[in-house]
Length: 400
Ligand SMILES: *Cc1c(COP(=O)(O)O)cnc(C)c1O
Image (cartoon, rainbow, N blue to C red; front, side, top):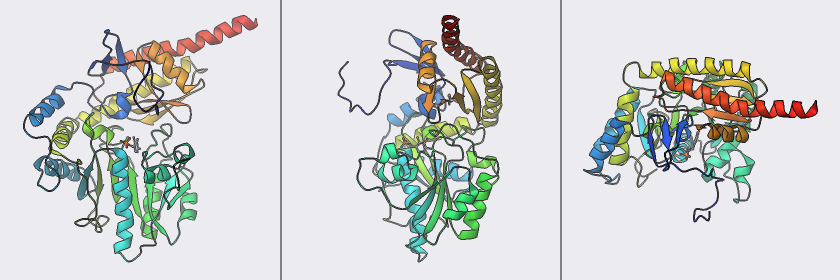
């Protein structure tokens, strides 16, 4: 098939016409259990009645006004977010990368207005992913994404993930901040050692650095807390969110304390689309559901159940699954077979998973997935494992 889309993606030969809950359906009626959730975006699944109603209601009234005017929907969403976490201020964006750009600018500006413009370096981690803009590819540090695009944005110092001694050694007079994903997503659902975030917080406090958490993937209930940093009992200074907060509508944000945000005064930053009435009406509708009493606890409980079932699957198919990782409904299977092949076997069994680095497939389903759907997902993943088992047996048979 010829396509007029710039070919930066190797797309699967599969298109969906509609979705409901955790299920996607092709135009021909083929139904797929979506354990990828559009890369952790469809936090409430597809066609959630409350989100559809909010979209239609706001869509019939007013989509966009620009940030030259008061936007009550954005005010309300910002107030609800700050009430639920460490932050005092919110700036809305249209994507995760833009949220990270704003977070990075905020940290640098904090030191500049404090009389230290030379403090613009940010410590980042191997395996990180922060987006595809100039600053965020430099922050992510993946050479494949940087190569050929001209000079790399300066001021990002990469150290091994989880290595506090390396962080300490990397801190210098130019260091402004540490930027970290509480759980690496694209990097392969890598969960750092238990005390890692607490150690980073201490290093920040000792050295006058800001702690920036990238919760674009881990935030908004995904890990069984509203934000993943909340598992560790510390608070960051700045946070980026996106994916899940819009439930599929493009919406992101960076959040900051008063103190860390003190440089971000009138005229220092802006956006045409960010936080418009339509996007923030949908964001509020997502929060209506996620903040319902018991919802996030149910994510934690379902995540535990899912993880236990996956561990049993690993025991059945150790030649296919090496390890089960993650927290809440941000799970990963580290594989002994190529992750892309496993995802293809999944598609053959009508279950969707998302490959990540470190030969992992991610299971980041809509947070509304039911226990029955988890059981169905595990059964289909087992069938996908069977493809490789069958190959194993065939190979053994041929060798005998
Ligand atoms: C997806 C992601 C981003 C980038 O978000 P975009 O909306 O694609 O710009 C940044 N950080 C993390 C942790 C992500 O998972």
